[in-house]
Image (cartoon, rainbow, N blue to C red; front, side):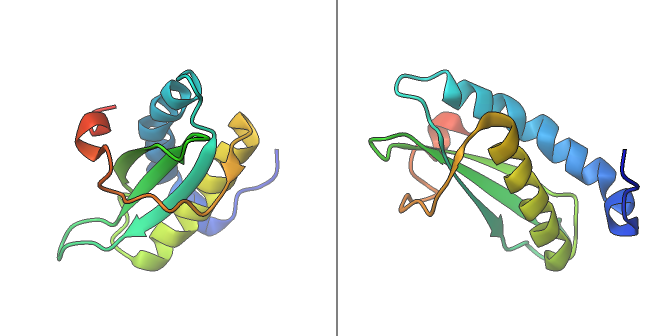
Length: 116
C-alpha cells in the first residue's frame, strides 16, 4: 500500500465517514429502474461554526435526480474540496458512475431522499 500523505492522514476519519454516509445512497440509486449512474458532487457553503457539507447528486437517463447531503467534518472549504475530489474519483472508480455536470436542482426530490 502506498504511504498516505499528511493531509489524508489528518482527514482520514472525515473521508471514511463520508463514504459510510454516501455509499448506501449510491448503491440504492444503482439498483433503481432506470439506474442512477450520472454523478455530480457539490461543496455547500457552511454556516458559521459548522462544518462544510457535500451534496452528492445522482441522475438517471431521464435526468431525474436524487440528492444526498453529508457533512465533511471539515471547517475549511479547501479541505472540503479535497475530500470532494477524493470521494468523486472513488465513486467513479468503484461503481462505474458517469462523471457529469447535471442540470438538476439540489432541491429536486430532496425531501424524498433526505434520509436515504
